[in-house]
Amino acid sequence: MKKIMICVILMIFWVSSSNTISAGEYLTYEDIAFEKRNAKLLRDFSTYDYNRLYSQLSGRRFFGWRTVENLSNEPVSFKKETLYVIVNEGQTPIRQNFTFKQSQQTTRQVSASGSIGLDLSGEIRGFNAGLDSQLNTSITSERSTMIEENVDIHIQVDPMTELRVEIYGEGLISNGVGKQYRFFRNTRSGGWEVFLLQTEYYSIIKEAME
Image 1: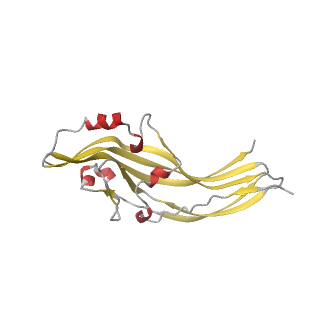
Image 2: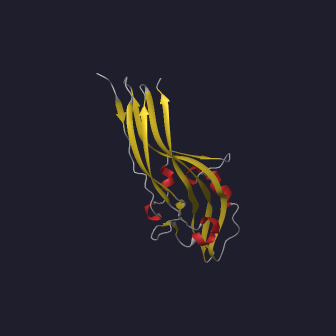
Image 3: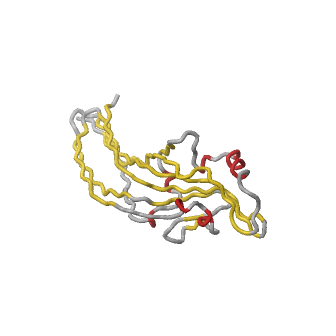
């Protein structure tokens, strides 16, 4: 009796509008890599990073925000998730058909730390207490351009071969810290981060098993 093990992990790849993007969804991606050495995500900031950036803020304000950037539209590549894994340990090929609905768009996701909060009430995800208006305009807009198409793939998985279908992509990261003042009193402080998704694509990988 031939021995065939098929493990299928299926998650629907469907990004139809900004309403489907939850704040910080990019932080759930399997892997995020910067092109620039020493660049880091907000979640990886150390106490030293915060103190270094806070020291760059100018003096207190009577009312409003003081902000400073750590990264500005820094390119990143990522592996979002693995959709399918098929392992053929048998002696005959496995023939498999896949149908995907592919979407590409530029959309905005945000994360924050400290006492900086998120405003998720509208179509544009952002930060509360007016912080968005203090950030660089290139990272506060949300423009979505969608291209949708059905993709049908017919593939053969040979004996002693593993096949993986994965989602990869590219984007831009901007982050930094900020402090809000009311009557010269610091009322909010923490980190902010904006992720702009540029593209996503499928990758089909076939590898011989050892």
